[in-house]
Image: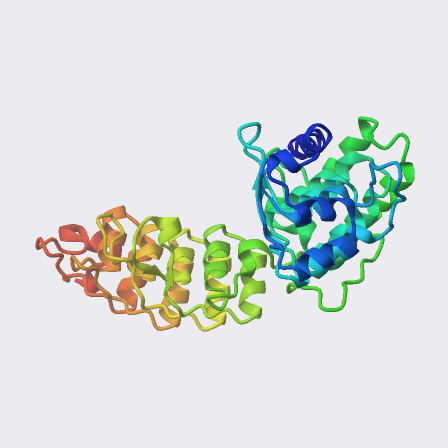
Length: 411
């Protein structure tokens, strides 16, 4: 991941070295931002320069990228580094309307897309990174990529950038995207980088980053920093688990379908409504809404069912009507199908209709008998299920052999 980030920096260097930026469509504002010339930047902005002007190479490269990319470095021999100048330029550009999350790319050389956050992190320009975060840069996938590079780089100053990221978003190391495809966490990545010698010359950076990621060094969130709710296991609600646009609805559905008990409880404790029917079209491919409790019952997850019921979930909704075996199933249908007599008891105790029919007039008892789940069938009959309730095609729940499941007293 961070190898692509290095390619970005090298390409940016070559672009500037050979062409000075001008031939690539860089504006005067790009060049002033790149140099950290705050006075010139302010002059150009006052004269109407566009803070979101884009170059054609790198594609869509903005003045904000230029400032973040160059940090405190100065290539001109007649100039002295102005510490903090590029960070001040970033603040001026943002105040003038620059898009702090502007995306640029180096196609056709690489498909990677980067915001100014990546440029600041890869260059270890921590003051620039801090300025971008203060300005409200999105701490999504770009921040995860930035953190991945920083913990692997072994570069002097990397720990300071890591600390800034964590001060602005303490949950960053625990987000869903924080675990790599091979199962490694950021701490695993750090240890592997250390074992491969990345920190041979900077052992103090390794120790500092290790302390920050392991939690042995406390990170105090910045005033105004977004600190998501913390769950009982110490992780945070983050990524799609913190989507509040629908009162945690999408987050709740994702937690339930993933079978994540801790996150489900955390989301419910933070106000998610388990009774709402939620649009899951992007995940299920249909246009119908879904209820969290139905998904939990379908997956036979008793712990999550108990959590949802404890928070007031309704036991009567049915699965969306579509061309599948479980069309219009209720929670009780799923309990019967999954041969879960304990769940049957729980649902009945919460008022689940014992003979609730599907669109084809299939009862939970019919499912239990069809599958040969004798104990479930017995519980349903004891609760008053009708053994003579016929399906649309005339078939009866347990057929001629329902006595096998329930005894003659139910015939």
